[in-house]
Length: 202
Image (tube, rainbow, N blue to C red; front, side):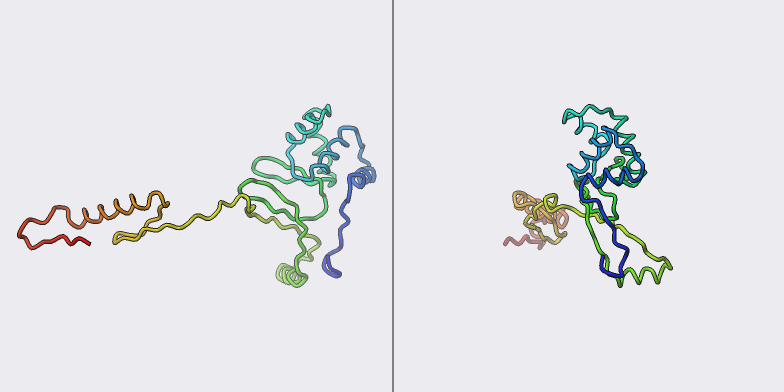
């Protein structure tokens, strides 16, 4: 933060800082608790209790699911790690300092962001609400470029009965069917000979 914006935060820079914070809070650093913290700092992503349990056991760490869950709850309650409530369940992250999130609406992946809002905007919000802002987080949603399908060529068929979209392989067939439908709608029965009706070919 710039000077005068908000009080600066001091995020942990390594897992040893988190160990020390646990000690300062009077928390017991058991072997299982260290394993959970170590994994979160190695992964540096947002994981469910099941994810953490499976990853630790795949690494040969003998730990039960109940122990994983209990340690995660204790750590997030103490403010040592973060916990995000999602429709699919809770996700846990290694950071506990104020920060923002960017979520991919297609894959569900969550990315940590450090966003600093302009001081002028914060002042305006404070004036309108009567609050003194102490900290803030933003939740942004979008799609990774890798999740966005490549644009395809726009093929449009225009006729007297409307405009249609079609892929290149269907264009001729679709256009012919549309013309036939138009002709059938206009002339349900062929004009009788000598009636004065005529069909013009182009």
